[in-house]
Image: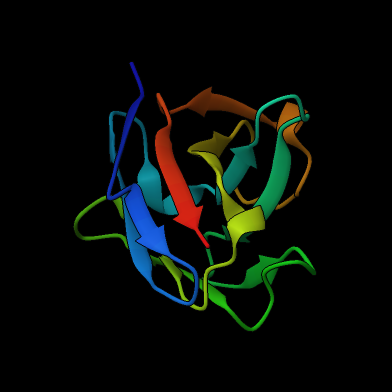
Length: 124
């Protein structure tokens, strides 16, 4: 059984930084694209970034240049470094594993394993 556990969320002032981590157990971590998504109150879950099995990265326009996604296959861990945070980044952040090996996408329905989420709150 594949399990994902996020950590690293919290409260930060605008302009600050946070680093989220997601540890994956079960399955073959290195073969799958790992994505980060977020959901703000009253809004749909949206794509933030992903890092593919081949380390190719892709970002939503709203976070490009501020966030950085990476992975450590030896530790079965994916990271999301968030800099220059804005109040509109406030949301619950989720990591997820793509349902297909060697396939990359930014569509939430293409991911079938999800973590429990970690809250990120950016104050003004």
